[in-house]
Length: 349
Image 1 (spheres, one colour):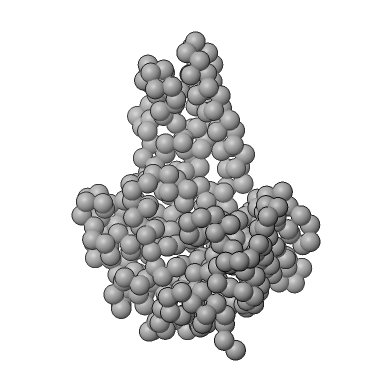
Image 2 (image 1 turned 90 degrees about the horizontal axis):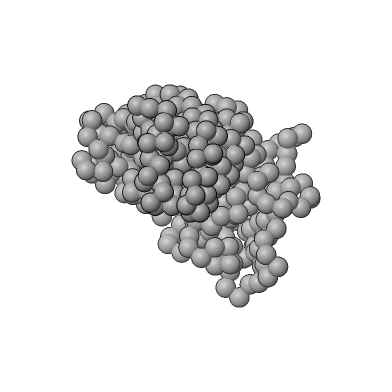
């Protein structure tokens, strides 16, 4: 399913905007400050409650406005759903088909939204939490057991850490349960990694990467069981007061021609490789039967003409509804692309 219509009121510079995107690749064109990113942010708000810039939902309100609202129609026919988001003096409220929701979870489950920003490659390479978040996003949408499993793991981890801070050795009683759930989570990672890696290699090649891109999963207890690793690390955990090893430290490492990407990759190569990985995750979600929505904020701007054209083609082909921004009409857009121009916070008629 895809977004069929978006109505945004008082989101940044958008006073009252109605937009009907296409089901494939949509390119929103306009000068700086015209409202391109604000359109993407309206989609993000209604689907996840998250903004794409600093300041939270309060900062996303148009200056002088007490309240912002976004309503979207998602899907068609019997599967059509109307979702809504409102932020005002009384807090944030979501709705689905007219029914209030206590959180965005029901909408997030139905509407897989991935955000790609110009600095996404820097963040992904520098922050393990960002790499885990992207992986968890895909697992959430392709593995039905992931959310409950992750919540259980986090609960046991909090209990073990609290017991560690007490300093009486009671924390050991949580080791078996933490290891059991942690190993199961690692198994989900391995399965996702195996299915996404070939897609990643294919997309990196299509985006014109010169060299061999690889991604490897890194387990912090590699070579032993997690329970054995927890026992071996007890002294360190007691000294630090928290758990060092576990599924919360699973990670990915990216390589270019067998060398760490951070050390040998140019700015453009890093952007291509991380974009290829994120698009491969989106393709994996699409293959599970859901249609991801990709919010792509000026990501291809720093790519050369050939790679920029390849990027838009991959966006068209990855099984997602893509919404991308650009400051000028991109050349060589794939057939079927819908182009929208934004001026001063509105779509001219």
